[in-house]
Image (cartoon, rainbow, N blue to C red; front, side, top):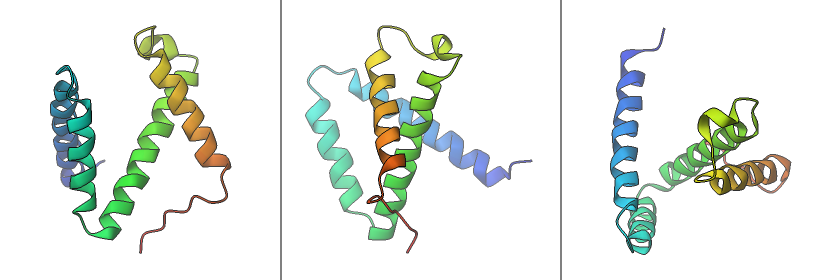
Length: 105
């Protein structure tokens, strides 16, 4: 059974993601969102920066795995096919790269 704090973190992350994705719906907001994420990331402790990138790469890998799964039609169509293909390619690159190492320090 998952501990309560993990469920709480998962729900906060989901609500934060909902807000961020809704902001992406504002035409022309892409650059502002990129700057906000980058400035927020770079303002954090360096260990937390690495932890966030590790989590982000895992999200990309799991999204790409959904795209390549037998059940991809449940998650993807022409509107997000490019995102699925891109995430699958990035995940493959990360998996095959000997230069990417993100330890917790």
